[in-house]
Structures are given as structure tokens and as C-alpha cells.
Image (cartoon, rainbow over all chains, first blue to last red; front, side):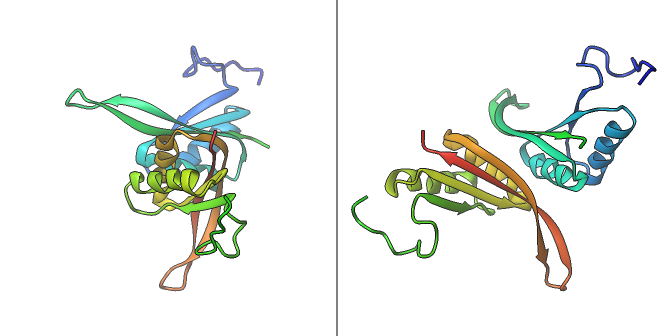
Length: 99
Length: 99
């Protein structure tokens, strides 16, 4: 960790606390992202975030990586759809540590 | 709580620790079940359990009930499908308290 990586993480909390947003890809895509973050970028804590139907994929990702689960948080976010209506959507945040 | 209810909860841990299994119904069905358990049966802690795609419905249920979240656990269960193959499936357990 002598070399500074300033490429993609600019205003984030350095490389120690990374966030991976889980969407509609297969879980393995995100597992790969998590493992890469842990190994290449030297991240200590990685947070997986997902909303709505992707929540189950986020849980799959956390389970497949087999990393230690630090914290799980659930919440609600308000999203405005195309018709301009506000809709509440559930969200999950799973923090993983590289133990 | 003077009247004993022995109908459905036989060998479970009495009425103080109830479990609701979330499946493919809309979240409101399970919200109703949670609220009923809290109010009618005098449950203190209710655990919502779900597997696979139903995990997001379980999170929706927990969020809509607006109860206090005591604990969230995720895990993996092995399920044998019709072809006799073992398949790993993610699961979630959300414990709610009536605060």
C-alpha cells in the first residue's frame, strides 16, 4: 500500500470503506467485485447495497463471498418514478470484513 | 394472557417467540400477520423468515410494520429439488420487537 490509487475513489472515504451497488446481474458478478476489492484494493470493509428485488441478490452475494458479516441494516428509500409519483422501496446494506 | 392458546403453537417456544414464514404473497399479507401476532397473541418478539426471492418481501414486511428491528441474520440453506440435486439458497431472519 505504498502506491497511492487516486483513479476512481476521489471524494470517498479512501479505499478502506468501499460500496458495491447490487443490481440485476447474476450474484457472481458482484461476488467477483467484492473479492477484487478485498484483494486488489486492500479494502477492509466493503458495503453491499441493494434496493427492491435486488435485495435477495445482495444476500446471495454476501453468502457466496463467505466473508465475515459485520453489520446488516435495512431501510426504506423514496424513489420518484416516471409518472412523478413517490414510491417507497426497501433497501439493504450488508457490511463485510476481510477476516 | 390468562387464556391458554394451544391450537397452533404446540411444541414451539410458547407465544413469546413467534415465527412468520414469508413466501410469495404480497407484503401486506405478512404485515397483517405480524400486527395480529403482536396485538392479539401478545408476542414480544416476532421473527420473519424468508428464502430466495422472498427475501425482499421479508424486508418490505419489516419496513412496513415499522416495528423495532432487534436482529437481522442471513444464512444459506441447502434445498433438494425435484431432480434430487442439492441447491444452496440464501435465507434471512429478521427479529422484530413490539416497542
